[in-house]
Image (cartoon, rainbow, N blue to C red; front, side, top):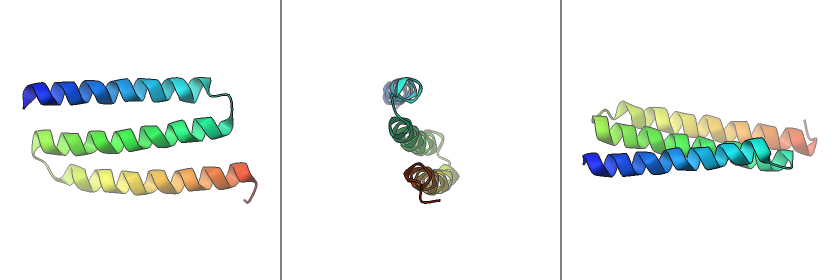
Length: 85
């Protein structure tokens, strides 16, 4: 289980780094919003992985709440960029 955890966590860190590069370097605001949403999804996956590794299933609830709040945040930012707010 340890080696699987390290490999998965390494891939999650790599995905966060790539998303962060897109967030900083993104040519438009829409690219930055998509990168932020991607980082939110990656964080949700990290919480689920932590729940599995530490055998603490409260992290699943945290991951679900974080995913819902991330989704609402992206919708609000997209509506703001569209000019609807």
